[in-house]
Length: 206
Image (cartoon, rainbow, N blue to C red):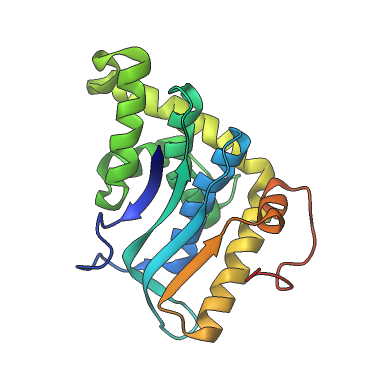
């Protein structure tokens, strides 16, 4: 079964979103990537569509995603995976010391660009805990637990995630790319896991 953690438009070939900094979107997608890896699932990679180049700060107008294939039964890890995008994005912006779980919860609940993540998270909760887990205060509390789980996974790897994001932003900006595709590779996986501190500009496109 092919699944997808996705930021932005359901169909990135049409329409536009409010501009999102490329760095924030990459941090969002790498949040999903790390959570998938830590759950024992290999993502296919990630992609970003609709990059517009502003001086020194590329923005995204369409969306991006992290596809992955799995035939595993639904489990709690998947709720953490779907929450990890918003967590990665917020950690990248504010750092671990200033991070508040409530901010990521609110982003998932209210930000239209996170609608796919929220829907997938709700489906995991329904299948694991019943429909009552997806309504009212109970829903927010369950999302909070998924956000906390994602935070605990990502904080030890935040410097690695930040290095990977910053290197890719530089690469995309230098090449004036409108589409960025990062296939899974052992090098990227090792860097994000913290097991390889090789400098990032060497094989960013490998």
